[in-house]
Image (tube, rainbow, N blue to C red):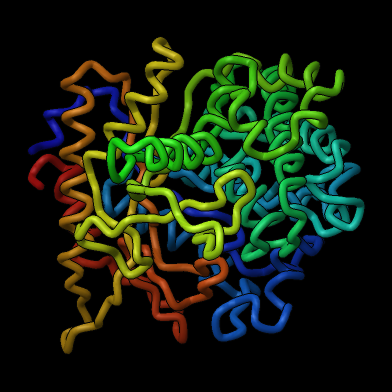
Amino acid sequence: MNRSDFPDSFVWGSATAAYQIEGAVAEDGSGPSIWDTFSRVPGAIANGHTGDLAVDHYHRVDEDVALMADLGLEAYRFSIAWPRIQPEGVGPGNRAGLGFYRDLAEKLLERGIAPWATLYHWDLPQALEDRGGWLNRDTAFRFADYAALVAEELGDVIPNWITLNEPWCSAFLGYASGVHAPGRRVGAESAHAAHHLLLGHGLAVPAIRGAAPAARVGITLNLYSIRAASDGEADRDAARRVDGLGNRLFLDPVLRGSYPEDVIDDLGQREWFATETAATDLEAISAPIDFLGINYYSRHTVRAGSPDEPAISYPGSEFVEFVDTGAARTQMGWEIHPDGLIDVLEMAHTMAPELPLYITENGSAYEDVVGEAGGIDDAERADYLRDHLLACRTAIERGLPLAGYFVWSLMDNFEWAWGYTRRFGIVFVDYATQKRTPKASGRWFSRFLRGNG
């Protein structure tokens, strides 16, 4: 496999998220986010870690952009911290916050690296959560206002925009299981948060284009390949449930303008979703997009579970068990199935045949060890990347419109509820000194990008 196996226009990059890398959470007028609040809840984050410092990217932009250029990246997907722009979630833009992202984008462009900005990667201003967060329909409109403000200010230096990152996580990890910020557990009503997130996306699409007419706008969904453990009716229904809640509940409204009826029934939320307001919202949610971002990490094999011992706590998918297929796993416990990447691309392509697709996250966590000479020989991660790039090549050979690939993550960082106990980076960060060191996987990816991988 060589880079020449891919189209010349193929986009190669890496990705990060604001709260995971920036630090400086209270500097230059930035307001508190739900993650600032949640990380201070005893027991919420491993070892009591917070993102207060993270990897200090806010003060190390020059160093980090130079690192990207040295690796040979052609694109960088980063997120914009909403509280850094609007500390209260409303009102005029904070000039210091806007200036930070302008400076970042301009430095990327100077190095020939295309900026890809995500407007929401989970750091909702705490002030909006205090008003109900994503369970409050008004938050969707405030998000559209924020999107328009940022696009008007930065549209001249940022050509590619992603509205939301993984709304499934925001809705169900944040409002159902409560393992992510804001840590609420409202059961099936968490589906209301999913709807309002999608409404925010739909309202933001024309808002961005109105402020920056040349902008390319999309959304990123975390999709999973789902397989039933057997052909039995109960196992096939378990696969239907997980696929419905994880994939179709988001793909269908964005790409088809409708919700899957079976999923709404599974959730027991037909009355709420049948209201005139929710039905009318679908027109906005399905605003045409220029591309679809897909975050892919693993494949799930499922079977019917015991109602007495539910394996997962997300509404609509009770009585489901995940099957261990014997595949190798990452440190996160996620099975490694590169062919599942092709599955999710085919799933999206079937629903929207003309839409360009991008893998906006793909990566793996391992227990990296610093060698005596100071290097990090993460052969497992290099193998993971190689195998998934092979799957990307196969997808293109099958005619799927895959247009780019972003490694998650550029560097080690604050891994949400796992704190600093999980490392996904192709660049190692010594959290005590903030020294950055490319791992063997990063050097391999760099060689690949330069045509001799």
